[in-house]
Structures are given as C-alpha cells and as structure tokens.
Length: 323
Image 1 (cartoon, one colour):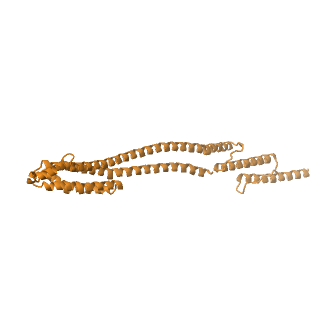
Image 2 (cartoon, one colour):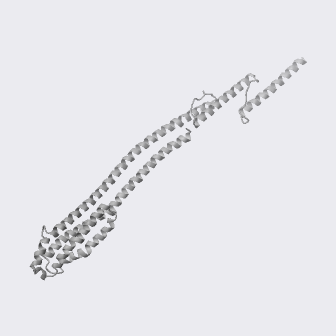
Image 3 (tube, rainbow, N blue to C red):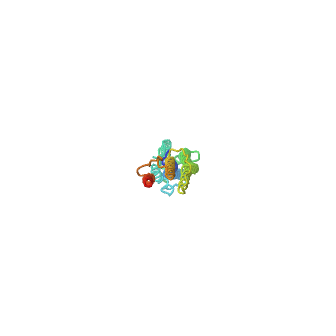
C-alpha cells in the first residue's frame, strides 16, 4: 500500500470509531428521550388522573352513605358534592384522561372502557336511584324506602361491594401504570449503563488504535526517513554509503530506489573523474540526461583535456623535428 493509502486507512479507522461513538450516543439519547417522553407525557399524567378518579369514587362511597344515614335535608353540602361528582367532576376527569388514553395500549384502553361502563351504567344509576328515592326530607320518614335502601349502602351492600370492585380495578390499572413507569426508569438506567460500558470499551479501542497507528507510522515513516537523512548527511560529507536495502513498494521504497540510483550514478561520475585524473581519456561515460550538469561538465572537461593533450603532443613533435 502507498503511504497515502495507509494514512487514509488509519484515519478512516479512527473516523469510524468516532462515528460509532456518535451513533451509540444518538441511539441512547433517543431511547432515553422516547422513554422519558412516554413517562412524562402519558404515564405520569395518566397516573395522576387515575388517582383523581380513585379519589372521586372513594368519596362517592362516603357521600352516598351520608345521603342515606345522615343528610336528611336536601341540598346539604355533601349532597351537592355527590351531585357535582355525578354531573361535573367525574366527566371532567374522564375528559382529561381521554387525552392520554389514546396513547395507551389496546389492553389498557379496553380495561378503562370497562371501568367507565361500570361507573356510568351501574354505579351511578344505583346512586341515582337512592338519591331519587331520598330526594326530600319526608322520604326519610318512609320506612319502606329506608328499609329498602339502607342495606344497599351498608358494609356488604350491593353499592358498597360494587364500589369496592371498581376501586380494586382502578388500583390494578394504577399499579399497572406505576409498574410501567418503574420499568421505563429501569430501561433508562440500563440504557445509560450500556452507554457508559460502550463508551469505556470504545475508549479503550480508540487508545489501542491510536497506539497501533502511531507505532505503524513510526515504523513506516520515521525510521526510513531518518535512514535516508543519514545517507544524505554522509553524501554532504563526500562519503559514499552502502546501497540502501529496503524492499518496499510505497513512496519510501520509490525514494530508496531513486537514492540508490543516484548513489550509483555518483559513483560512476566519481570513477570517471578519477580515470580522467589518471589520464585515461578513453574511459566510457555517459551523462544521465541533457540536464545532467555534472556529467556534461565532466564530458566537456574531457574533450577540452583531449584537445589540450593533442595540442601539446603536436607542439612536442614540432620541437623535436626542429632539433
């Protein structure tokens, strides 16, 4: 692989690790956001309204008893409370609950609908029957009416039993939602625990990747570059180091091969200069290219020396002939 490809691969791995971290963070935050939204916008308000409904049904149990046993006069505060419970408060709570019921699962919806039917079609009609029968002060003096209605609101009476049944069902529904809220909080804690564990593991993986990448870069770049630097320092001192042995196919390998070629050419140039100095003008030598300043200069120098040598030879011959 080329160095650029290795660098891209290393940074791609690091980028991938960071992206995984980002994705895990987003997923965890979305999970917790969804759970928290469900708890805060559906479960907790539903629990609050169900508690309000439970309180109303519990109060109705006391108020209907008071209607029979205590409140003989009409329009007493307790009687007004029971009437208001039937006509306003119950339906107000039901209307508020309907906003959240649409987000419940089908099983809870059916359970709530059954509760409403029990309250509206059975409990309240029983209350209404008692209220109508004892609608005036004189009606409390009617022994037949009192004899009929009293067992209905005593402990074990049908109104009390039915009210307790509704309260039991409401308690079940409340416990169900409280359990869901607790499960939601547990899921959030579990998600955060998984997130923390994943962050730790990812952090360890990132450290390992960084260390491996750093060591790879040191082996891949620093050592070869230092080696080439030492070669260049030797060359600057006029020394010809040994041929570098580095079997690599990346840019460092290409640089090494170019350096070895340069060393080989410098040796040839040095040998040519040495032979010229010895007077061996016929030594074979070719310049590396038209732009080879040193090689072309040496060839020009050889030609100049050959010309001077021939000139001196002719002069010597002429001098000898004159003698």
